[in-house]
Length: 446
Ligand code: ADP
Image (tube, rainbow, N blue to C red; front, side, top):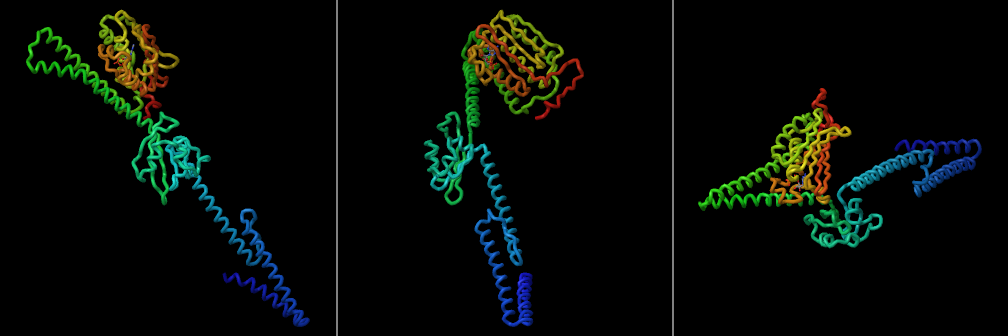
């Protein structure tokens, strides 16, 4: 600040000195005239800069900061710096706001900002889809007029801090949304919407599953307790009747054991990693053993054909693969009447390993095929139970194949027979004669 006075003082001193010199050389009037003219020039210069400043202040965006002279130089450069700082902080704020909007816009959950009167202030694109609103068109409008749904109006009218509710949007009845309203600011509200369709579906599947398991256990338990009561009451039984009843009890106990076994297998599969191990499994040896078991299960009622590539192996879990192959073969036996043909193939097809079981059995109508791998889904429950089925076999097969990145393909025609194919990806294929590594690093992640 002291510097401020040096230049004006020098300029005024210069004018006074010039006036003095002129006054001494000529006369006093000429001296005063020079001083007055000097002061006038100074005033005019100040006025010119003042006017430039005024013009810039009127429209700082359009005009550049003026160049200055003397003290104006420092005024203008201070203003210029202040303006740059201001611009930078405004840019920072604008970009922070934009990023915040982008982040809120990218949220998978819907967000609607409502004012105290429930008018839409802002919403993200998920909310637009959930409530059928369009921010550009509906901003400022009453939310409950735009997103018409009885649940919405009732829920928003409740006291703030209410528990979340669920609703099915009018424009998409298949969807289930969970809503929660959160108060903020003076009397504003944040309405959050989350798509819980998958969670609700999983919950329905779980409930159905528990109901199915209970239902499956009820019949054998009723049979067992009924016969056990007879025994407990010492009711005399003919030896032939007693033998028959004991046999029935054994069959029902075995059925429960099979069911529990399959349930445990499923639960083990669910709790294991989603990717099967990458250990090489000697499938031809495995199928050798399976062939013996299958033919003894069929007890000569079916003609078998085995066509197994002795060099073809895959990586995975031996125990799980055994369960897939034996489930498919035992289904072919159980759903093929006596005298039918069953052919089992294990071969390389276009670089993929294919396990196929073809039977000449009862076949399956096309509408059932997409649902066969659902737990407890059976085309004919009576037949499945009679032959010792739990209704979980293909669910286990599907689960194991997913863990091996393999596909299940089903071709079937009622009355003609079915072909079930498990197709393993080429990266799981191994050749038994080569010194191929037992592990496949690509499949060992996860
Ligand atoms: P299940 O224990 O009832 O056999 P699965 O899950 O193994 O249960 O099979 C589901 C249903 O698929 C069976 O109940 C049956 O209706 C049908 N199915 C499976 N394999 C065959 C097949 N080879 N031929 C005809 N139907 C089959």
